[in-house]
Image 1: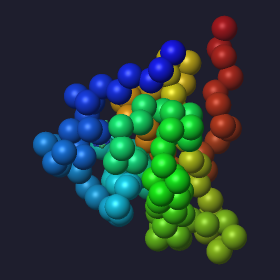
Image 2: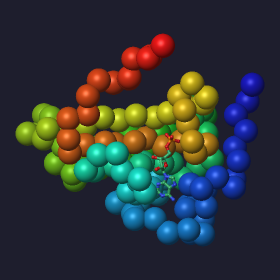
Image 3: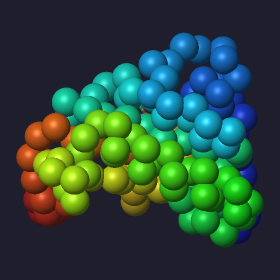
Image 4: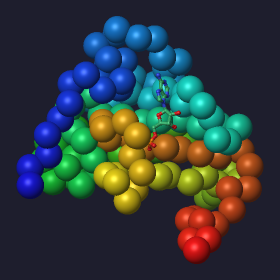
Amino acid sequence: MPHTYDPTNIFARILRGEIPNKTVIETDHTLAFHDIRPLAPHHVLVIPKGPYVTFDHFALEATEAERADFVAAIGTVCRDHGIQPGEGGSGYRAISNAGDDGVQEVPHLHMHILSGRMLGRMVAKPTA
Ligand code: AMP
């Protein structure tokens, strides 16, 4: 089934300047800003400016320029926060939730970059 992009989602509204955000970096194709409900000392969301719903949607349908810009922006966020393990940083987690099983709240692709504390295991085990 094709992806259907909802232009009323909150990140689309941020991109249109209709609601404020705390910008970390902005490039031609990408915006990074602080998550409004941070789950770690540093919690940044990196989003493409184009209308992509999920990471797979973006990976398969974005232009080469959009993909390169998005990946580079994630690298810039990690570098600027000093969290790169290879550069003496203490690490981070990059997560992109997709769809119902991924518990995606906002239907515009976003990569969470979480850092600044021990983040625990990747996924909580089922309790039942
Ligand atoms: P997800 O569950 O992966 O879709 O995550 C959506 C994220 O967007 C959550 O971590 C929210 O805290 C964050 N969020 C929602 N509205 C805003 C907003 N206006 N500015 C910044 N972050 C937001």
